[in-house]
Image (cartoon, rainbow, N blue to C red; front, top):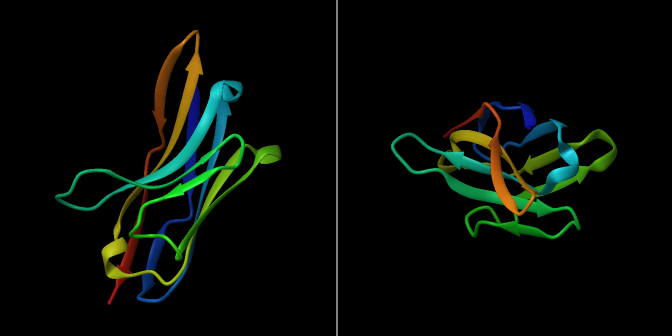
Length: 119
């Protein structure tokens, strides 16, 4: 089992910045990738950014150049630095951890952090 605790959401104006944090605990040795997904009202959950244990990153086209995902292995924490925010970035942001154990891949999710960008 992996537990994920998010923090850092809030309300900003267009062009502002926020940083989300996600701290993992539990069976962290089984995590091979962490990331952030987001879900806007009335829309499906979508990937924002991911980072592997090796540090490889992947971003949705809509956030490239504005969002940066990083990790601090000593703190078991993943960050999402969001700059130049737009109203379209308004969503509930979920931290995700993918684990593999005995050949089985599982997804774990945080409780969600609300990000609201006003125009």
